[in-house]
Image (cartoon, rainbow, N blue to C red; front, side):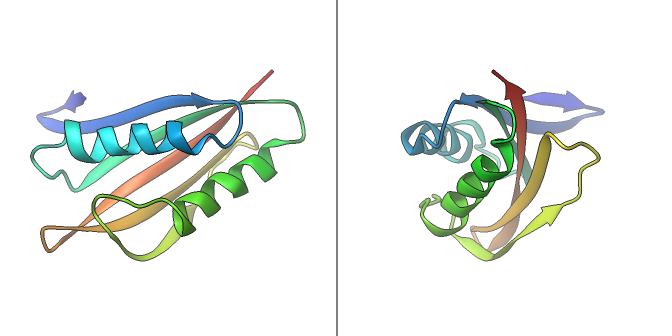
Amino acid sequence: MIKINGIEIFVEAFNLNNLTKSIIKSHLNKLENNYDSKGLKEKFVVVYYNLRTNTFKKAFEKYKDYIENEHKFIYPRVKEAEEITTKYTDSRMFKTFHDREGKEVILYHLVLMFPK
């Protein structure tokens, strides 16, 4: 948790070498279920992808596809994910929208390439 000017921000970060669904599930479940007892409006996931050059685009697409079509969130998704423009070639970001107790909460996914 990061606290800035009294505002709490939860960030869950983890490394991937490939699309390891069990690792993703474990970390997302911790973020949704264990850390956020208050029901914060926004939370952040940072994925460090350890990849060879010219493989990031495909790895990101696999991650995003898993999040959008397979992963079972504790708080269900309520609409389509939205991509967010980033300045850098080795980063991608999107947000997913979830229903938590009748209110919309947002989970930001920041995916970064860390070259092997």
